[in-house]
Image (cartoon, rainbow, N blue to C red):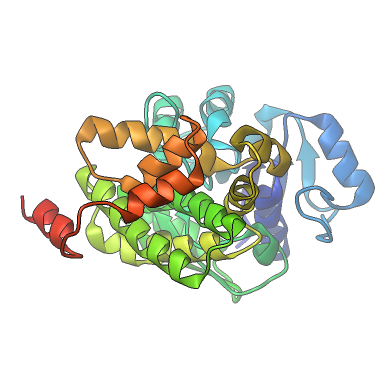
Length: 338
């Protein structure tokens, strides 16, 4: 059954979802705050900067009017996390309680450390929010490559609804009610992917990346469980699955920015070159949150030292490799049994 869907955000991921949903027969509207950007997309038939080569059907409506969310069955937020609260605040007066909100962004709000579903609940309290997360590069969704993802919500009927609307033979949607775990896995893996890129830029190999990813999911899990997530969630698509794809693919903006940093480019300059790099902003929020809660996150701390404190990559590698010797699971065992 076709439903009416608004996608807020005309970047790569928002357009990829719009193209897929349009191909399934749904009625799709894409909203961007920039009419110039939309006019360019319509003129070119694609977003050459964010999703080159992927044709945007004339069936997909393009608008800069936030009221396009009115009477939609689903409203998908596909905007950078730093803009989610503002866009949600603008959209809220036009959204009825029967609409299901879907958040596709992955990050934490600066200063408050809130997950995006928490931000959306504060700004659009009349609606249920479903989190869409997992290993899902826009470029591959848009071209129909098989992808699996998770729809997370504490209310199963809302997650079931999103699963039924978005699932097809190339896009498999699982459901999960551990919203905290799914969101934190998706947000915090960006930090580790940024570090993976830094290691690539320096010239380190597979051993280094394997160690980084394995110890990275360990500290992600520690913080997640402290905030109420289920540890097993981080073994799934929104944990290790998303971590693998983001640490290893050149589609990943986090990894690409990290490569530039590893080659000696200043962090802020690297972000300007690549574009939206969620891991850059999430590092500070995660570091401050871990310090507040007393959770050991040595990789995140080193990333913070490089990005914010101006420490050298080599100094931080030496610090990580020189940490006190211990049993591999010692810290985890102590954490989960206290």
